[in-house]
Length: 384
Image (cartoon, rainbow, N blue to C red; front, side, top):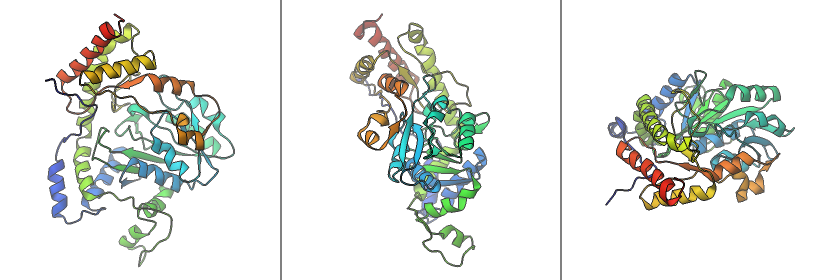
């Protein structure tokens, strides 16, 4: 019986289990111990970020960003509708209105040319999302934000270890938010990081992360006792999680190289279908511009995507679509707004299909994926 090929599979790349055992022997499992510090320091040094705070998820990092920007009910934040719910959910919980802006048809990222028309007197921030590990046009977005007095928080959940003009994604906006969920390139099950690129936000970020207390200042000897001084929540991850993550961070370049190999295999093998006009492949990108987070196909229609997805699933291959646009979701219609229709978002979201891509997928499994896509177009779909 042919084995099933999952869309994603968690993996061990280096010393994860050894570091977990080490964390146990250090008797500090609750958080902010040796491995949390090591993860923060590695990210700060590698990506040139003034302060990196490890958190339980990218959702937590986005929630902290909303608090650090002091967003209030009635404020507006610009973001794409083609994103995960957390990008908007962190705003709605504060009574902030998400203003959805369309995406570019080439990169599927926030269309920088449509941002300014969405800015109003209530606009306070922009939350660009780097889709599939490829960056938004950050120089243009930062220029627009500066001109209009807006803050920028990069949702870089999919873009850890991707760069733009020599700068790490997540290190360019006032804040950046990383994810280490098991579906990402670098993983620890559930985990994230808040990149604090504006030094003026560091002290308050530490307070918000530690339940609204000045505990960090106390341990540094800056105050003689710690107490409740601000809003906050429990945004400190477990040491066991951070021990696993530190081993993955050590292997970041090797993980990127492996994912590029998988990505390039798909691109080369599926190029004939693209030349026939049967599928569209992701926009080409250089080795540093992307971390090769995912590989997708754009089909001619939603019906074709559904049929191909069903065919692959029948053959034991799990391929999935990405995002029901937030502006069309019940909560998005209730709490969000747009200044114009979002035709690219509506079109792309209905035609995009993501292929299995994980660290230890075999070439034989990739060949099987490609073969079954070919079978679909030759026989089931009757296009060859």
